[in-house]
Length: 314
Image 1 (cartoon, rainbow, N blue to C red):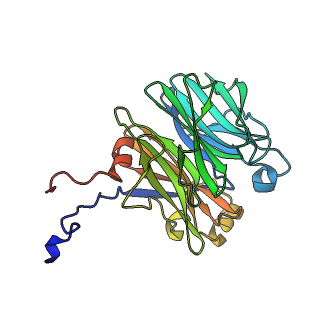
Image 2: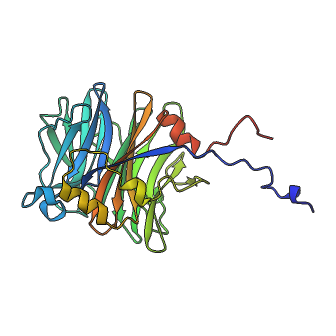
């Protein structure tokens, strides 16, 4: 038997997309979603409560949007909601968070057409301990990803809706990575693509943590990228300063912080570019928000982790 008889001899790996880390933009921020709304790029932020956010000392948590182009803040909303995400559906913006406390069984939904006035409604998932969430749409059906503390903390469950109000929790056979930790999720779909793409946090010995990617056609059977991880912590790159308005105190916090984690990766496409936000830090409450970019479309970025080059296929 020759080496060429090895089935992997002619294997061609997918080509890893080149992500450019731009640096840190804020302290004590983790859950942030880039989202395009009415042709403008916004950053949705879960503004953590004072005990987890030095800038918000003595105040409760809330949600808010940042107009990335101007830096303007929208009015805050969703007081005492946690671990939020945002989803734009045409001219309507949605935000979702856990009501009251991390690990609660009730998600609060917020809906607005101007980012200033919000209608709200609650959806209870009895028996679930809910944390981070994500929303996507495919063929007129909305899918809600819920990070839950189950037999293995954490795993992902899924619910579906036709109208963003009435949600049906799928059976627990529709889940992601029930055998080991999976955290900090985002879920994406692409027009004409049969897959759901999930960005998630994988735990490694150390401990240390890195963002990875998997995909599924049915939310039950999952294919992992052969070139995981997507984002790995890098102290030099993560600690670059991308926000010139960070104070000397904040810069000193960044300098001395332990970096063993890249987590909570979220992305969107804006003007042909893939905008990425992620968290770095120690996964023990000392965490920072950073920005990155891929110079290409969201479709090019997501599919590259699974598709092999076509020009040299045998």
